[in-house]
Length: 376
Ligand SMILES: Cc1cc2nc3c(=O)[nH]c(=O)nc-3n(C[C@H](O)[C@H](O)[C@H](O)COP(=O)(O)OP(=O)(O)OC[C@H]3O[C@@H](n4cnc5c(N)ncnc54)[C@H](O)[C@@H]3O)c2cc1C
Ligand code: FES
Image (cartoon, rainbow, N blue to C red; front, side, top):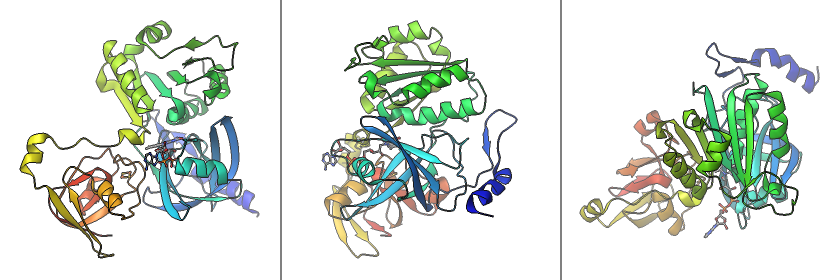
């Protein structure tokens, strides 16, 4: 039996199915977010002039289990430095043998440019298992509204592809904002999916027309007027939003203006500039000691830091390299055991309660409340 036959031989035991509640269930094996695996690049798709999809299979060819909307933390050595970044799995869990990430080149960005320039079919990429809670799977809402801008399209694309693959014909309205028509990621595929799923509606709004003089779609920015015109029932929909920080804040404002219930609003930010958690309130700062000492138990390094900094940013300033990615308490890359001392941690789902009980903290969103000894 050759490797392809062996793969097919495994398929029945990893069959994917819908649960009785209509949510996603997969027989594919779990890949814990704390476990690194080697992925092999199989295919690269040019989506736009600065966005590429990289398709991977696992080294052993086994399928991967994840929820639509989850991300992987990928890592590589770029110019001698170990770099880790989060990328949403843009493919759906209904196609568990190939996992895709769709990456926009960020000017001056380390990982996105490295992937665009170096990742070729046959090359390896190291990645930690799927993570993140931004998924529509658990939502029992009969109608959804997906709002995305730029590369923020990826989690919503995975959710849409999964819904169409499963033949669910969910009532999904997908509104994507782009700079110009040429920047619309997955444009043709989304238009094709509409034909396959009668209750899927797709709308594009572009800031400008760029070189596409024949563009007849909406131009400008998403507004409550445009949303009401396209979707008079938008206030009844469960909203999932992903895009740059400025876009998401504008979306939140316009939905609030339109009377949408904030309890039915879910978002994920890719934006590292939005990552800096707020400083402690002034009275707390006045009470607190100004600086604390941080010791690293393995390397015996020591540095001092201010109370308003995160441990990760203070370590970086002190020349201590700590693996990190999202810097917003989402991905878990900076998880470290605090052996002595206490921190104030404000995370966004990147750590489990049982890990906190064992003394682990996310250093990107933790500020010291005493001197610290870290297991590093
Ligand atoms: C949960 C999650 C999911 C994501 N999913 C996707 C996805 O599906 N697709 C996607 O394309 N992206 C996604 N991202 C974003 C991705 O993780 C990276 O942040 C993005 O690709 C940029 O990484 P980079 O290494 O290329 O850029 P970086 O090197 O991190 O740089 C980012 C920006 O900061 C600037 N910069 C870097 N260093 C400095 C400095 N010292 N001073 C000032 N400016 C500096 C750079 O010029 C650049 O503009 C996701 C992020 C998160 C958190
Ligand atoms: S770097 Fe992602 S949780 Fe800290």
